[in-house]
Length: 442
Image (cartoon, rainbow, N blue to C red):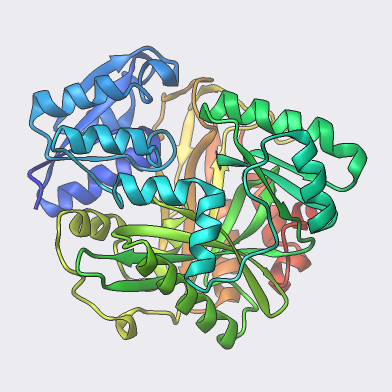
């Protein structure tokens, strides 16, 4: 097992990883930007080092600075969390070149599954259903030809996209030229890779993902599934485990497909395979080769500490449990608490003047907030994740209503009231909602 782990991230995920390491007896090293000098993860870690200015490119995306700290402190491994460098194959290669374990599936798998059009081909090889699509579009003329072949509406995707960026839906020929240019520009700016491909756009679908865990011996375990259909501008707001209204047969097929895909690429550690679900059919969308923000709901239901097992499998530890030992008789819901204006959803900043976190059995708030903490404009607006678990979905909804009503955050505008609106909405309560739910509720 690793003696020291460097956490190449910030905020709630850095705190989450530090807690897991402490429970495992592993020393932790935090890195931080000048804007995060007073951050909670800096205080919680055994060692902390400033690596640059407030901008991401100067600090949390500064590969050389992070690896220099890891070498200086004797860190055997780096945990990248989610976002930032977590799915960057170049960073993974740099770690490997310096004999540092990046806690993830490795640079080769990361590169394969990070190129979305290549991931589609691997999914097809593994017998996983995919929507009609194209190869990389080298020109606008190729895009027009592909759209005619696939049939409108289509969706343009950046090969290296993620986090809701590098995506545009095109409903007709007249929209394609501008959408193509926009996606390429956004992809170049966000991912330094402007390669774009096309898929058939499916309307009124559920967004369901399957959490897997693999070890170096090739053992693959499915830890459960999650519904992530409550999204605004392709950004997830609410997740629940398991996904409601899926039939047992559909769930079985999705789990089997996920295991085949993970085995096809020799996947190790924690990963997530995302699908679009329409009726009794499902289609591969992408694979996230990292920890997901919403891993918490799966932990609550399955009884497995995903972060601890992510670290263990990266260290070569074999998975000690079997598929039939995974719990599935509970239901968990997660609400992402974000710093934003409740009227127009613009990002909010400010000092936390008062913070009251709800409690009770199976209620948790994953966050790095504390009273007097200053929310700056430099980073993602998510402040924390309010998660509840109960013996039924109805019970989980009632528990979330109670937790939201008890949650108090003064000093920073946030979206608590928006989440309460969902918990009282008949469409959400029925469970058969899809990715259009925000248009109906908000």
